[in-house]
Image (cartoon, rainbow over all chains, first blue to last red; front, side):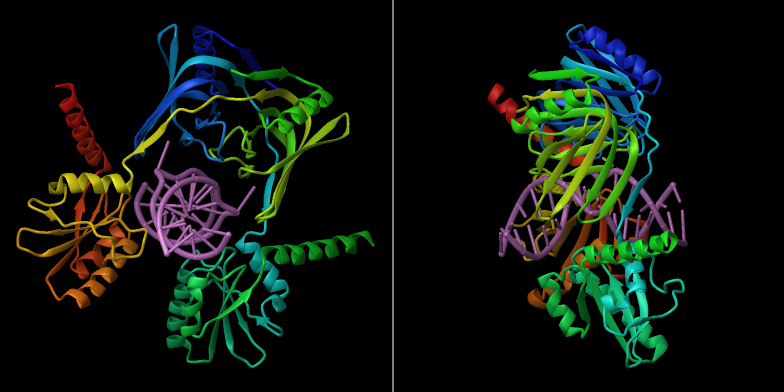
Length: 257
Length: 257
DNA sequence: CCTTTCAGTTAGTTA
DNA sequence: TAACTAAGTGAAAGG
C-alpha cells in the first residue's frame, strides 16, 4: 500500500510532507490539534481541538471531530489545496473552490500523525433495494400489493421524472396507478398521486384507483388519503429484497441442476 | 494526544488492538484492504480495495474510499462493535445497531495502519448566517428589504413550523409578510407564501403584500411570482452577516470605550 | 450547464 | 418519542 506515515512530525516536516502530497495529488490524512475557518455559502469558526483531517485524491476535504457521523467542516471534490507556514509553530492548509466560491482553512499547531499516499481501490460497489428495485419486485410479484393485480406494460412514465410508478389492472378491470415510496409516505406523496390521477382521469375516462405503496404512511397523511379516496398498502423494502433474492436463487439453481 | 499507531500489524495484532479499543470506547482508524457488506434499510456489497475506516468514540463508523466526499458505507452513532477473527489471514469488524436494525461488516485481509486512542476536542463550533440569522439581520436593519419597512412584533408565527417569516408594515400602512430563504427561492417557496397570504386575507381583510427575500429567485419561479402578484427582493447572506458583524462590533466598542 | 428529486439521507427542533 | 423540516445538504438523472 503506497503509504507514508510520519508520527509526531514537526510543523516544518509536516508542511513539506503535505506540499509534496498536494503537488502530486495524493491522499493526506492528518491527525492533530487544529482550528478551522470556513467562509462561503455560510461561514463558520471551529476553535482549537484534536481532529482527523482527510484530504482525498480528488481534492475533497473532511474534518472529523471525535464524535458524530458528519464532518464538522468539509469541502467537496475538486478544490485547490495549499499549505501556508507563517512560522515554525503553525501551518495552515487552505482548500479553495469556486462555484460556489468557498474556502476552508485549517490551522495546525500540533500534528501527531501525517499520512500520505495512494490507495488502490477499484472494488465494485453495488447497492440493492432502491426504489427501482422495489418496483422490480412488484413487477415480479404483484401480489405484494394486491391479490390478482396484473401489471401493464411499462411504457415511459407519463409523469414527471423522479416518480416511481406502476400501471396495473385489478381483478375487476379497474386501472390502478401505484405510487412507490421506499420511505414513509408523506402528505406530499399523497398530493402528487392525486394530482396525477386527476390529469389521467381527464384523458382516459375510465375507472381509476390510486395506491400508495410504502413501508409506512405518516399519520399526518392519513386524513388526506381518506378524503381523496386513495389507498395505501404497506410494503417493507426487506420483503422486496427477499423476493428478488429468492428469484435470483431460483435462477442460480437452474444452472446448478 | 493519546494516540497509539501501529504500522503494518499482523491480522492477529490488529485484532487485539481493535478489541481493546472497542472495549474502552476509543477511536479507531484502520487503513487497509477490505471488503464491506451492509444489510439493513437497504443492502450493499463492496468488493476488495484499500480504504480508510474510521470508528469514532460514539460508535459511529465510516468507510471512505480514496475519492468522493461521502463514505461509501457507514453506521450512525451508538452502534455495537465487535471483532471477529476466523483465522490469522483475515479479521472482520462488525457494527450493529437496532432501530433501525442494520449491520455493516468490514473484512480486512491486510492492514497498513491501525491507530487507536482518544482525541480531546471541546472546541466550540459556531456557524453563522443561518436562516434565523438572516431574520435577525432584517429585524435589525429592515432597509435590507425595503426603505422604511417597520417590523411588527414577533408573535408566534401563525404558519406551520419550519418557516422563517417576518411581519412588517410598509410606509403606506400595508401589512407585509416576508418569507425568508437562504437558498435560491423555488416555485415551492412562492406557492407556500401564496397559500399563507390567502388564509391571512380571509382573516384580516386588510391590504396585504407578500415578499420573498432570498439570495436568488429560480428562473422557474419567476412567472408564478408575477402571476400571483408577489414580490421578490434579493438579499445575500453575506450582507446579513456584515450587518450582524458590524452590530456585534458596535456592542463590543461600547464596552471598550 | 441548470433544474429537479432522491438519499441506507443526517441532524435538530418541537409537539 | 414521533413527526417535521432544514442542510454550507451531496449525488444522480433529466432537459
